[in-house]
Amino acid sequence: MAHRPYHHGDLRAALLEGAERALAEQGPEALSLRELARRAGVSHAAPGRHFRGKNHLLDTLALTGFERLDTRLGEAVEEPGDPRSRLLALARGYVGFALDHPALLELMYTRKHTPSRPDELTAAVGRLVETVLRPVTEGQEEGSIAPGDPGTIALTVAATLYGLASYADADSLRELEDHLPAVVDLLMSGLLPR
Image (cartoon, rainbow, N blue to C red; front, side, top):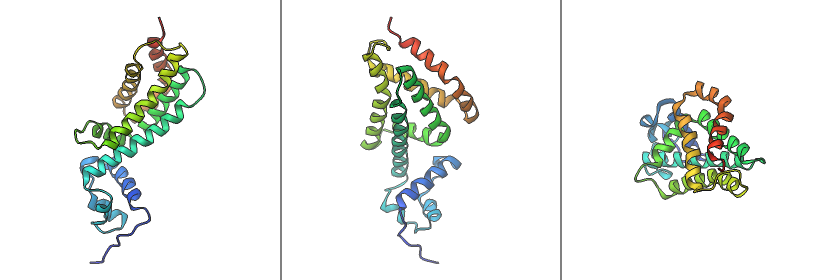
């Protein structure tokens, strides 16, 4: 049997990329560090240098997913415009991520609720919440969003987007993109000061 080398350009990144691909194709149950090593062309022990086991791999995959989603949403809320346009950009960014990475998004929210989740994952979720919170607090400061607990308002926005993404398959999500302005208008009408 040929010896497989331990060295690989960026084995951690290659394993995460392979894990995300396998996740999309087969689901989390089918993920195997041994199979990922085989596909990366390294020894079956090599992934152990980066991941303590399958759960650590899944947590790391979820963490990188939250970081990527936060980057996408952060770019969306930086777009100039009023709170409605920033919320619409945020909604499009979220639905776009859900379209591009449905299996990863499901894993992210599953791992987020795991009691043994690592602190880094909790921190990444917190950063994402802060990103969603930003257009809400800015809208409140300029008087275009109702006063109240911005965390509750941001939770309503996030839950709406997550709910839309989890209800839909890829085809209906594509259709949903056309309806996002109306969804944001409904959210905004509920957020208007009275």
